[in-house]
Amino acid sequence: MAFRGFVWKAFTCGILTLSVGCGAFGGAEVGEVTGKVTLDGEPLSDAEVAFVPTSGGTTSTGYTSEDGSYLLVYDAERDGAEVGEHTIRVTRIQPEAQDGETPKQYEKLPASYNTESELKIEVKSGSQTVDIPLKSDGTVPTL
Image 1 (cartoon, rainbow, N blue to C red):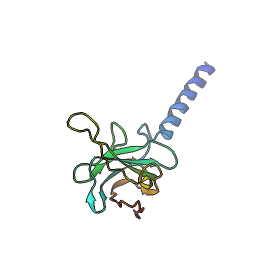
Image 2 (cartoon, rainbow, N blue to C red):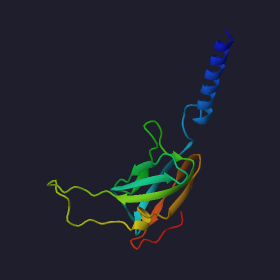
Image 3 (cartoon, helix red, strand yellow):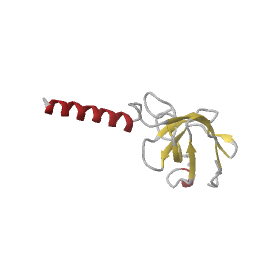
C-alpha cells in the first residue's frame, strides 16, 4: 500500500513538472510578429523571413507577399515567435519560370541578411510590428 502511494505521488510530481516546464502544456511563451520587408525602399516579395532564437528553441518563419508584408508562424496552432532575442534571416525564394525551368538571373540578398545575419531583435509578449528595411549593399539596419 505504501508503494502505491509513492507511485501516485511520483506520477503527480512528474505531471506537475511537465506542466510547469512546458508552460502548462502550451509550450513556450510566444509574441505575435508581423511586419514588412523592403529592399532599397521597395517591397520585397517572395522572401522567407525566419526568426531564430539566439538561446535555442523553435525557429518561426513567414513568407512575404507582393507588398512585402509577412506574418510569423510558430507552430501549427500559434502565430508568432518565442519571447526573447532572435537572429533574423531573410532569404529570397527562387521563383520557377513558367516553363518549369529555373530562371537564368536571380537576385540574391547579401549574406549579412541570411547565412551570416547580423539582424537582431527582441521579441516581447503580445503583438508587435517588426519592419525590416534592407539595402542592396548589405548595410545592417537598426531594428
